[in-house]
Image (cartoon, rainbow, N blue to C red; front, side, top):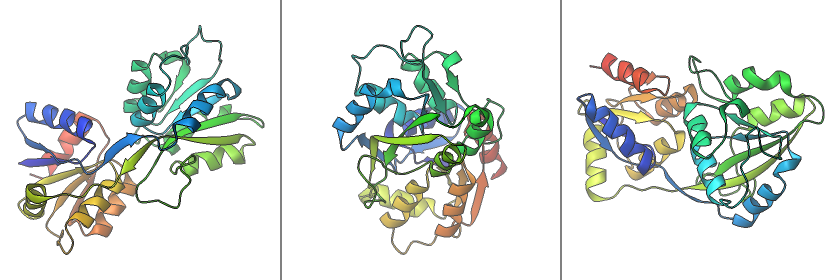
Length: 266
């Protein structure tokens, strides 16, 4: 069985290699491209004001990596020895891993447990929501999507549910865009592969609704009723069904869970 990995190039190649090691014909077909922040001055200002926050919430591993890459000279944060007593919030294990690579200590990271049924804002809030009190200040580090040109280049979009919970508890929220997602359009052989994989029994793996939108825009008029997909969140599943995918399976975003979901489609 062929499995199509649609994550950004680096992550797609990593997952394709892992699936290939288990015997699958795994193909990296990136449908999301990540680029640095459109306004690096805003990121620099966020670093300078970081000590004024109680926590920084990172929406993804990309948010962590681009935020830290922009400020490699600054002293460590999210550690016991840091002068800034600020915690890091993460929605899942990929973001936690990125924080650890950036030098954060696990004791200063709040995230859903490895056994969580879902890795998202709701699961994160269940872990740390009780900590938020009136006056609690959170910086949300997120991305700017190519599909939302009306969004501010410094505020971006995403994780609004989490921000609303903080506000409802009496806290305050600021935002900074650490990266941007670019429009991806498949060309030539990539288009041919996508069209073939729409009906030949291939399994599409989606970890982003934006990837689905880019795929549909790349193949106008393509019928997806025979296509199979594995998605890592119910909202992504909704996007796949709206696009017309005939089979949509939801899975936790771990290799073992994804393998089990793929095997269920054989």
